[in-house]
Image (cartoon, rainbow, N blue to C red; front, side, top):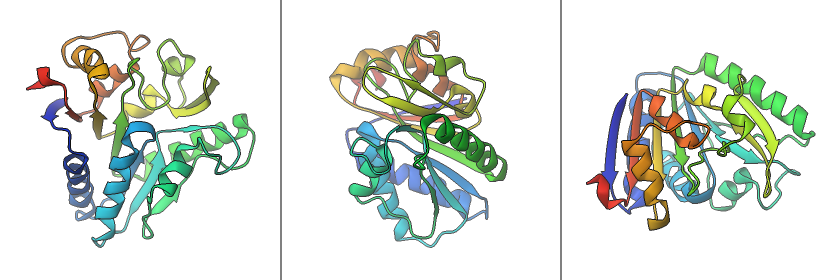
Length: 223
Protein backbone atom coordinates (compact mmCIF):
# COMPACT_ATOMS: atom_id res chain seq x y z
CA UNK A 1 0.00 0.00 0.00
CA UNK A 2 1.20 3.49 -0.92
CA UNK A 3 -0.09 5.71 1.90
CA UNK A 4 0.08 9.51 1.42
CA UNK A 5 -1.19 12.29 3.70
CA UNK A 6 -1.90 15.80 2.45
CA UNK A 7 -2.59 18.37 5.16
CA UNK A 8 -5.06 20.87 3.74
CA UNK A 9 -8.47 22.44 4.17
CA UNK A 10 -8.91 23.22 0.46
CA UNK A 11 -11.39 21.01 -1.46
CA UNK A 12 -9.82 22.22 -4.70
CA UNK A 13 -6.59 20.38 -3.89
CA UNK A 14 -8.38 17.07 -3.47
CA UNK A 15 -10.44 17.63 -6.62
CA UNK A 16 -7.37 18.50 -8.68
CA UNK A 17 -5.64 15.37 -7.44
CA UNK A 18 -8.55 13.09 -8.40
CA UNK A 19 -8.97 14.69 -11.82
CA UNK A 20 -5.29 14.28 -12.61
CA UNK A 21 -5.41 10.61 -11.62
CA UNK A 22 -8.52 9.94 -13.71
CA UNK A 23 -7.23 11.78 -16.78
CA UNK A 24 -3.85 10.04 -16.59
CA UNK A 25 -5.63 6.69 -16.82
CA UNK A 26 -8.05 7.82 -19.54
CA UNK A 27 -5.12 9.06 -21.63
CA UNK A 28 -3.85 5.47 -21.57
CA UNK A 29 -7.19 4.46 -23.13
CA UNK A 30 -8.20 2.62 -19.99
CA UNK A 31 -11.80 2.18 -18.89
CA UNK A 32 -12.04 4.05 -15.57
CA UNK A 33 -14.62 3.37 -12.87
CA UNK A 34 -14.99 6.33 -10.49
CA UNK A 35 -16.92 6.02 -7.22
CA UNK A 36 -18.38 9.18 -5.67
CA UNK A 37 -19.97 9.54 -2.28
CA UNK A 38 -22.39 11.76 -0.40
CA UNK A 39 -22.16 13.63 2.87
CA UNK A 40 -19.13 15.80 3.52
CA UNK A 41 -17.45 14.79 0.25
CA UNK A 42 -20.21 15.97 -2.11
CA UNK A 43 -18.42 19.26 -2.77
CA UNK A 44 -15.33 17.37 -3.89
CA UNK A 45 -17.29 15.18 -6.30
CA UNK A 46 -19.04 18.19 -7.81
CA UNK A 47 -15.73 20.01 -8.28
CA UNK A 48 -14.21 16.91 -9.92
CA UNK A 49 -17.09 16.81 -12.40
CA UNK A 50 -16.69 20.52 -13.13
CA UNK A 51 -13.00 20.09 -13.90
CA UNK A 52 -13.53 16.96 -16.01
CA UNK A 53 -16.13 18.74 -18.14
CA UNK A 54 -13.35 21.06 -19.30
CA UNK A 55 -11.37 18.11 -20.66
CA UNK A 56 -12.10 15.65 -23.42
CA UNK A 57 -12.72 12.18 -22.08
CA UNK A 58 -14.37 8.85 -22.80
CA UNK A 59 -14.47 5.41 -21.17
CA UNK A 60 -15.48 6.87 -17.80
CA UNK A 61 -18.17 5.30 -15.60
CA UNK A 62 -19.43 6.88 -12.39
CA UNK A 63 -21.20 5.10 -9.53
CA UNK A 64 -21.98 5.76 -5.86
CA UNK A 65 -20.15 4.18 -2.96
CA UNK A 66 -23.45 4.11 -1.08
CA UNK A 67 -27.02 5.30 -1.18
CA UNK A 68 -29.88 5.98 1.20
CA UNK A 69 -32.76 3.81 0.07
CA UNK A 70 -36.11 5.39 -0.75
CA UNK A 71 -38.19 6.62 -3.70
CA UNK A 72 -36.39 7.97 -6.72
CA UNK A 73 -34.97 11.46 -6.08
CA UNK A 74 -36.01 11.51 -2.42
CA UNK A 75 -34.35 14.46 -0.62
CA UNK A 76 -31.94 12.32 1.45
CA UNK A 77 -30.63 10.44 -1.60
CA UNK A 78 -26.88 10.87 -2.12
CA UNK A 79 -27.37 10.79 -5.89
CA UNK A 80 -30.14 13.40 -5.76
CA UNK A 81 -28.00 15.67 -3.58
CA UNK A 82 -25.05 15.33 -5.94
CA UNK A 83 -27.18 16.24 -8.97
CA UNK A 84 -28.83 19.09 -7.05
CA UNK A 85 -25.38 20.52 -6.27
CA UNK A 86 -24.46 20.47 -9.96
CA UNK A 87 -22.75 17.12 -10.56
CA UNK A 88 -22.85 16.60 -14.33
CA UNK A 89 -20.68 14.55 -16.71
CA UNK A 90 -22.49 14.33 -20.07
CA UNK A 91 -19.84 12.16 -21.73
CA UNK A 92 -19.62 9.66 -18.89
CA UNK A 93 -21.77 6.64 -18.08
CA UNK A 94 -23.60 7.51 -14.87
CA UNK A 95 -25.17 4.66 -12.89
CA UNK A 96 -27.44 5.59 -9.95
CA UNK A 97 -28.29 3.00 -7.31
CA UNK A 98 -32.00 3.67 -6.88
CA UNK A 99 -34.24 2.08 -9.49
CA UNK A 100 -37.73 2.41 -8.05
CA UNK A 101 -37.68 -1.23 -6.94
CA UNK A 102 -37.91 -2.50 -3.37
CA UNK A 103 -34.71 -2.51 -1.33
CA UNK A 104 -33.90 -6.19 -1.84
CA UNK A 105 -34.29 -5.98 -5.61
CA UNK A 106 -32.41 -2.67 -5.75
CA UNK A 107 -29.51 -4.20 -3.81
CA UNK A 108 -29.38 -7.27 -6.06
CA UNK A 109 -29.29 -5.05 -9.14
CA UNK A 110 -26.57 -2.87 -7.61
CA UNK A 111 -24.50 -5.96 -6.79
CA UNK A 112 -24.92 -7.30 -10.34
CA UNK A 113 -23.89 -3.97 -11.88
CA UNK A 114 -20.86 -3.76 -9.60
CA UNK A 115 -19.74 -7.23 -10.69
CA UNK A 116 -20.18 -6.22 -14.33
CA UNK A 117 -18.42 -2.86 -14.03
CA UNK A 118 -15.52 -4.28 -12.02
CA UNK A 119 -14.98 -6.77 -14.83
CA UNK A 120 -14.92 -4.06 -17.51
CA UNK A 121 -12.98 -1.39 -15.62
CA UNK A 122 -9.21 -1.26 -16.04
CA UNK A 123 -8.74 1.33 -13.30
CA UNK A 124 -10.99 1.75 -10.28
CA UNK A 125 -10.78 4.85 -8.08
CA UNK A 126 -13.04 5.90 -5.22
CA UNK A 127 -13.67 9.11 -3.31
CA UNK A 128 -14.53 8.47 0.35
CA UNK A 129 -15.47 10.36 3.45
CA UNK A 130 -15.07 9.07 7.01
CA UNK A 131 -17.54 9.71 9.82
CA UNK A 132 -16.82 10.54 13.45
CA UNK A 133 -17.69 6.92 14.26
CA UNK A 134 -15.12 5.63 11.77
CA UNK A 135 -17.61 4.54 9.12
CA UNK A 136 -16.90 4.91 5.42
CA UNK A 137 -19.30 4.56 2.48
CA UNK A 138 -22.42 3.09 4.15
CA UNK A 139 -20.44 0.63 6.27
CA UNK A 140 -21.19 1.44 9.90
CA UNK A 141 -19.26 0.03 12.89
CA UNK A 142 -20.65 -3.29 14.14
CA UNK A 143 -22.90 -3.54 11.06
CA UNK A 144 -23.47 -6.73 9.01
CA UNK A 145 -22.13 -4.90 5.94
CA UNK A 146 -18.59 -5.42 7.29
CA UNK A 147 -18.75 -9.18 6.80
CA UNK A 148 -20.70 -9.38 3.53
CA UNK A 149 -19.24 -11.60 0.81
CA UNK A 150 -21.12 -9.64 -1.88
CA UNK A 151 -20.01 -6.38 -3.46
CA UNK A 152 -23.21 -4.64 -2.31
CA UNK A 153 -25.19 -4.94 0.90
CA UNK A 154 -28.25 -3.25 2.41
CA UNK A 155 -29.58 -2.96 5.93
CA UNK A 156 -31.60 -0.72 8.22
CA UNK A 157 -30.01 1.81 10.56
CA UNK A 158 -31.61 4.22 13.06
CA UNK A 159 -31.34 7.05 10.52
CA UNK A 160 -31.47 5.56 7.01
CA UNK A 161 -32.01 2.31 5.18
CA UNK A 162 -28.60 1.98 3.54
CA UNK A 163 -27.30 0.34 0.39
CA UNK A 164 -23.52 0.28 0.22
CA UNK A 165 -20.49 -1.22 -1.40
CA UNK A 166 -18.76 -3.61 0.99
CA UNK A 167 -15.18 -4.04 2.22
CA UNK A 168 -14.85 -6.77 -0.41
CA UNK A 169 -15.63 -4.17 -3.11
CA UNK A 170 -13.28 -1.57 -1.62
CA UNK A 171 -10.42 -4.07 -1.66
CA UNK A 172 -10.87 -4.36 -5.44
CA UNK A 173 -10.08 -0.68 -6.00
CA UNK A 174 -6.78 0.48 -7.45
CA UNK A 175 -6.90 3.84 -5.69
CA UNK A 176 -8.81 5.56 -2.91
CA UNK A 177 -8.93 9.25 -2.02
CA UNK A 178 -10.24 10.27 1.40
CA UNK A 179 -11.53 13.70 2.41
CA UNK A 180 -11.74 14.00 6.21
CA UNK A 181 -12.03 17.37 7.90
CA UNK A 182 -12.98 18.80 11.29
CA UNK A 183 -11.55 18.60 14.80
CA UNK A 184 -14.28 16.19 15.84
CA UNK A 185 -12.79 13.67 13.39
CA UNK A 186 -9.17 14.03 14.53
CA UNK A 187 -9.37 10.99 16.86
CA UNK A 188 -10.63 8.94 13.92
CA UNK A 189 -7.85 10.03 11.58
CA UNK A 190 -5.28 9.53 14.35
CA UNK A 191 -6.40 5.92 14.74
CA UNK A 192 -6.54 5.42 10.99
CA UNK A 193 -3.00 6.67 10.54
CA UNK A 194 -1.32 4.98 13.48
CA UNK A 195 -3.30 1.94 14.54
CA UNK A 196 -4.62 -1.30 13.11
CA UNK A 197 -8.12 -1.47 14.53
CA UNK A 198 -10.57 -4.22 13.66
CA UNK A 199 -12.70 -3.30 10.65
CA UNK A 200 -15.86 -4.14 12.57
CA UNK A 201 -14.97 -1.34 15.02
CA UNK A 202 -13.61 1.17 12.50
CA UNK A 203 -14.72 0.27 8.96
CA UNK A 204 -12.49 2.99 7.47
CA UNK A 205 -9.52 0.72 8.24
CA UNK A 206 -10.44 -1.24 5.10
CA UNK A 207 -9.24 1.72 3.02
CA UNK A 208 -5.67 0.87 4.02
CA UNK A 209 -5.96 -2.28 1.93
CA UNK A 210 -6.31 -0.25 -1.28
CA UNK A 211 -2.94 -0.22 -3.12
CA UNK A 212 -2.87 3.58 -3.51
CA UNK A 213 -4.42 5.62 -0.70
CA UNK A 214 -4.30 9.41 -0.37
CA UNK A 215 -5.85 11.25 2.55
CA UNK A 216 -6.67 14.96 2.56
CA UNK A 217 -7.12 16.14 6.14
CA UNK A 218 -6.77 19.13 8.43
CA UNK A 219 -5.49 16.91 11.26
CA UNK A 220 -2.31 18.66 12.54
CA UNK A 221 -0.75 15.40 13.68
CA UNK A 222 -0.40 14.31 10.06
CA UNK A 223 2.25 16.97 9.36
